[in-house]
Length: 367
Image (tube, rainbow, N blue to C red; front, top):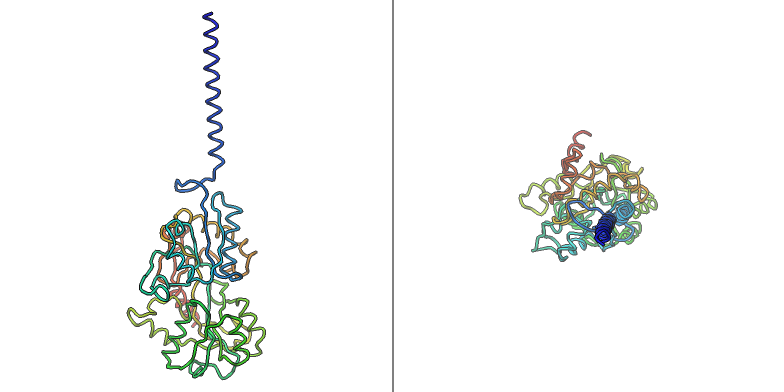
């Protein structure tokens, strides 16, 4: 009887040991099935990417980044969200709860929120930080009428400027004011501005081109600009006067101190074969931004995704040729880079560069 009890106890011990090992295996398997995260956080990171309107380059890049993350990343799950314009993104971030701010990367028009202008008047919002830049915009006034070659020629005329919170519209207004030119700015969408310029009811329109080379010397227009150029027999580019821009920047504390548009000379034929002379336009970079509380490890993962998948981004849009680690670190207005972006760029030996300094350097080298 004693022997039977001893055997029974041994069997029980063995069974308990086997059950314990089985439980450990199940536990490890369950842990291994969960997405692995950095910085000790748990579970998948749900990312919203606020872009601009459907069909814009910003929207296409948002779709591209979301698709690449969902296809290749172990724990970032992203969705691109269409919004009316960049200022709407900033307003949504201003009014968002803490969770939304920590889970959203968004395209911003520039420094509207930072400087408290337009809808932000009287309530500055400085939490926004740059994640990375992904393209560069050149703005200028384009005409089909040979009578309009200088700002003074616009006296008493109407110009089509972009609807919404175009960052260059106040710049154009300031140039007109600085030159004492009595011209009217008509807020129109691209198609209406094109038709008005081609018909002669407008003296010109605020055309937009996207840079595709980091030396600022090669430009590719957006679809609206390309359509305009293809339908116009003659095209004239009106200079942005450099002395007016410099005078505005020289006013301490003025609205245009550290303004995020900088002047650059566009070489002949860089925009269109009919552009036979150099002309001066204003440039800014497009960037995605995030709240200062957006997780640093997620910023680093997003930047690594973009760097590693540059070729795949080209499958979405040819203007992605502009994207490189160097151009991603460009900036053109006061808000600083997100701490996660600073850490990423430092790790690959790149220091963020102010666009104005780069433009001055390139202009000096071309003289």
